[in-house]
Image (cartoon, rainbow, N blue to C red; front, side, top):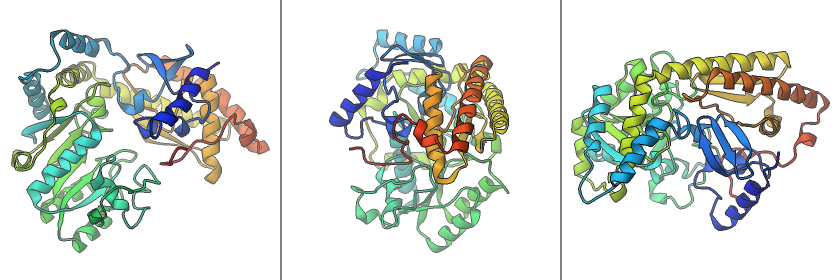
Length: 437
């Protein structure tokens, strides 16, 4: 397999684009430094073709953005029609109303909707609305919520505050120092931490969290968070950007019967086309009119139409059921494969997006990098998470497990002989955020 064109272009990109890519999670260094193909010329279903013409099964789905799979024909046809009719004009597109009505129908607790085009900016909008309503500046949060100042402010004064919230090493350089102490983290399923934050900070106006990512809520965790928000007068925001639509038709919170005051969707809502939605209760959402939130491209038509087509197909094809079944098959197969070869592999997370990690301490990342290298040779793009899509079928999982069986055989011997690093054809992959030179 040759992937020289992608590697060469990536090295060029790092010289003319700060950080190489617009998304940290798409850096070659996060997967396979000096070997990752980095660029594609075609993507369809579960397949990606790189610049050298190699064809891979992509298990990452553009870091979870495409729940249906790449270039879904139904979504693409809806978008192509809009392109021919005109994507944007001085007048607003009527699809905005149709999508808002659909989102409120699926979430009966919600009354109003605002739009954006990316997850990070949508979370910033939600925070602005919540602060405007509560009149309080401080935020208690759990989980990863993007790149904006309000979030990175958690690392002002203590750069380890965000370490356990998906991405370690996030430097708050450039974030106003005046925001220090305005964003306070708490851990998932540890309600006592949130209770402590609220008791010590009477000016908590917003509580933000992912309803779940890697773990199920325990001991009525979500219900307890809801009660704390009610008691303190804080606006409760659920970040559904990653988990939304994977467990149910809409937010994952619907499965647990706990409603927020605001929910935020992006990524999978529109199957790869830029789109985000902020939905919420009327009395809170109306605060968007007391503060300035506005952008020309939030009125374009493609994202809205793509979301309508994507949601419609997810409902008609019962996509969450498929994701659960295929993800469960993958998790069981990987556990069996690891056991067969005596590999200490941790298979965790939820069925629609299982997590893999090698339980070898500091050596785990090097082992993972070797795994990525060998799976790439077998025509798979892999990472720490497998994002199950509607296009990912049983035959693809069987092929993946066969490849993993071969690679685990190699890994097991390399670990036994202490030759993992010797088999790597490049450096070990990065962990978290690092500056690229």
